Length: 296
Image 1 (cartoon, helix red, strand yellow):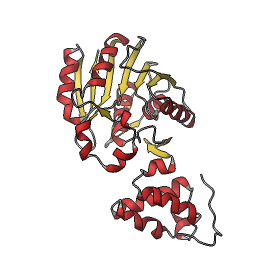
Image 2 (tube, one colour):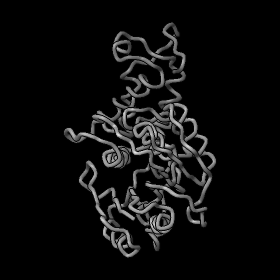
Image 3 (cartoon, helix red, strand yellow):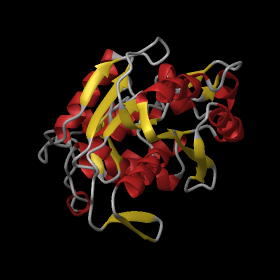
């Protein structure tokens, strides 16, 4: 939480904060972004804001200018919500997204004794099996930390090729009070074989040719290393991870991937050709094929 001043000679109103943001967001989004800044970054409740308690105008102006330049609010305030937990984020890692949490929910559903209620899984009585879980391309660590928090007996390891990402992920493990073993590993370059019961990954899966259709705040600010794959090999990381899994997974072990909906069918065929079975594709909340599970 940042310090704020109620007695400054100049203050900005809430409307003066969010109204200019309609140049970047629609009106409802602009209000939500302003509220996130005030509540998360400055620790103000909306009741306090309505009573005229606002942060120092100079800092708010600086934040407003970054938002007007298209910088994602999560990077501006240094935090993002993921599955009810708050994670540190910076431009060196992707901003966690709801679809990725759906992947975590699927793992938790299968690995714990969960009850399905509505569109969310509510843990009724967890029965973790003490499995070894590997998260490849961990980024902020949101998947690894979430699984370590929910499957409390699991032994979770997480890989990334970025030292910056691993530093952020380690901070998030501290923040979420979990133990995860973070390692600097490139899955494309013959990693050492260890044994795991489950491998999960949200690897780079956007082809360069898709960049033109992407939102500018993503394209201009989020790390391309974590986003893009070559146009001529969209399944590059899936193939490498599946090949590693064919040696590292215990019999009956599972792969869980977040996927590019454009290549769901091709990925399913690839996994089948590599002798994975019980392959299942699930749609995300937007009804797009976004997740896949395969058994070794």
